Image 1: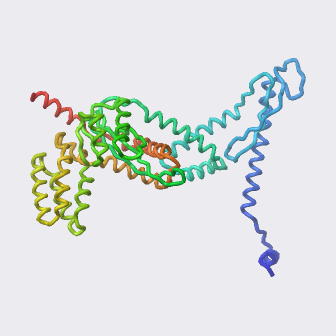
Image 2: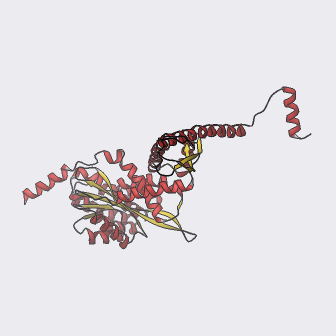
Image 3: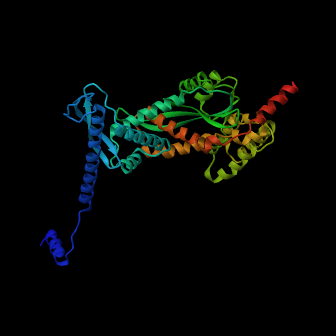
Length: 406
């Protein structure tokens, strides 16, 4: 006796009736959808009758127009996708409040979908949410249309004029994966963050770079300068030779601060793991000094100590790069902690990677830039960009003191 016969016998003995939940749900969906169509289509006919001032085939002296058939239109509702038969008139334009009302609702849902994307919700999750809202998942064409609308917004945001002065600018590059000709390649996304004259952090620019070379950074910096970027006193970044060279060409008046954390990693890369903690403590002592001269003196002492520990390579890296990490001493001491490292961008990078990790490999560089931009724009609208980061009055007071001294 097979399983089906056994189940049937058991049902007959117990008197129970089994229900296929999937078929029942499908049947109920069809009933609800049919009910919505049966309600909306007569309403459309009634609106057409009112506009014509006569019912279909009715001949009256007050008739304003006649019917010319209808066209079908899919409309997404909470009950799912319904098919409407929209009347066509021979002379007048048929405008229906029913569709307009749903269009307004759809527009608001569309705005919500875009905001979800900006907030970092994955496309797959967006599809699940639309199914809960509309009863059906959004189509691939709908997702494509939403992306195009979003890309236009992001392009406008990236091209916005930069007004005012940004004394401090942080630069960094992200490496993401993209598919190209059936192969997986890397794409560099360049990011710039600035501190405004009021002390708030802003996303200044995002762009694709074929790699973090001089030409990519030069084009990126020139683009921001053309948009109005000015007043730069200090640029903070890791040791990217292409960046430093481009910076000297585009903003020659700006000083360069090498990120202390990245510098420590370079030195510790020449140190055995067992001595890393000891050497790290010595390196931190250099940047804990009261001024640049004292820091340089401490660096010489640390280099001598490294040689005593037979760490000649680490000592050479230290002496070769220490001067690049001390530019922040020329600025107010209240700002030193925020200027020594590229931490403001590193925190953003962690948020970006958390979002891009879901994607894995991008179809092209533009989609990578757009997703990074969307995430940065969203974060900038939250606490990150609305809380004052530095008291820039300290910098202006220093300028006034120097002017009075001269």
